[in-house]
Length: 223
Image (tube, rainbow, N blue to C red):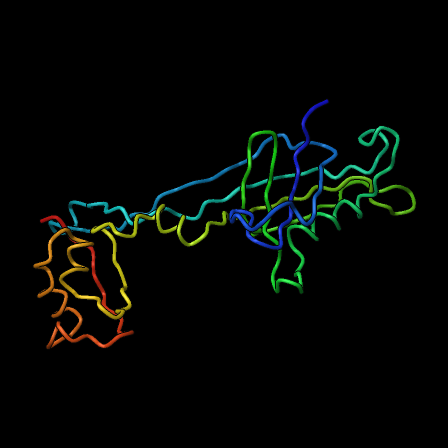
């Protein structure tokens, strides 16, 4: 038998070790024809020489999304003679992917799993088209279009975005023991930038920075 796509709902982040099995599960009756997994990059434009040259500076990764289209078939053709109500299928999907869960005060985390493929995220957009009805007005076939946005924990997201890069802006909240020259060395690999950073942030004394103060460390432009 073919492997069926599953939607798995988790009340806790499934990417953390404390999470065990899924809280809710839905297995499709009809596999989708395709999955559309979209990735991208973001760039800042630095127009130079009166606009004749457009220098693209890498900014980071854009939002990663997955588009899934499912046919919800309530006919005996799709269910081997066992009628599976379209509304019941839709309710199960909504419970996993869309409905507000009062226990965790938000919708659940969703894993779209199909054989070796897995995508962890939250629903971004959802659209249902009711297509075929019987004589009594009961829906026999519907199509649901879903777009998910990827979920990452803070540590993974920071690693992916490479937030220590000197080509990106950093807003640093000063903590006890933080020193501007050390932060400059971490970001730019050069502690001598502390003078420019102090001037940019309007500091007259770079040695005694109040705890909790936010300082901007801008990207470096190659001359």
